[in-house]
Length: 295
Image 1: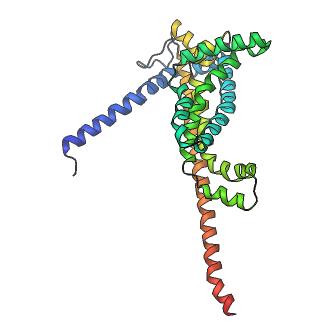
Image 2: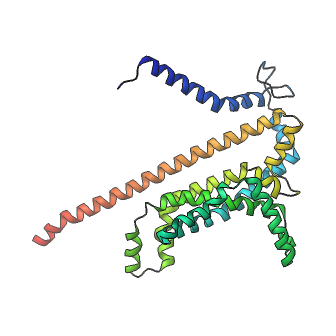
Image 3: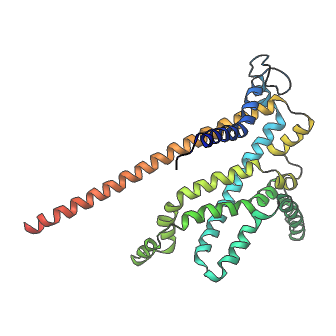
């Protein structure tokens, strides 16, 4: 049934309100980042300037927090993605009777409040490092990486598991029958198949770590990340330099998303071309077989 005029108007209105709600704050911050007043202002536009971007990069605390957030994000990726991969593989290997219990256990960190994860991480590692004499591990960066990875790895596992459920196990069996070892099957068959999911999990892990606040604010101790620095600045009063930071992050994210989409489409096109070439070669071989037999 075709929608009537009223339904079309309501759908258009809903779409406009949705995108206004979604993109409105970004537009406000983008305009205020180029406006000259000392406080975030959209209208009136008193002048256009790039001074707030210069002030942003000259802010020592902000740049220190940004570098710390990038470093922590990379470490979280290095820990959370392998843990998520292992968790997804185990999920497909264990007996169906215990699979639901295992799923509940590995997903439970996602349901735990970040404040609880941050506090429990600090308390546990303070006692552990004190009893084992490894006080050098009681560091804000180490605790933050461990606290964030404890729940971000569950997100990674869910992404990888969704891809792994479409994997054809007969490929592994065929490789093992031909004499391949389990590490070779994992490296040459399973990992290439999971490559898109691993890339998606790595991106999600990094972004989740970069924007995390609840766990970070307790686990970071005396160090600072970008989120903790921004939280302190907002309490003191926002400035257009924060708007400039938002513009930089949004532009970087959009460029990264576009680059990833271009790479993905080229990879898909190359895979399709290889598949077509293989099919053409197979058809040519099949069509040439009778001729060879007749000759």
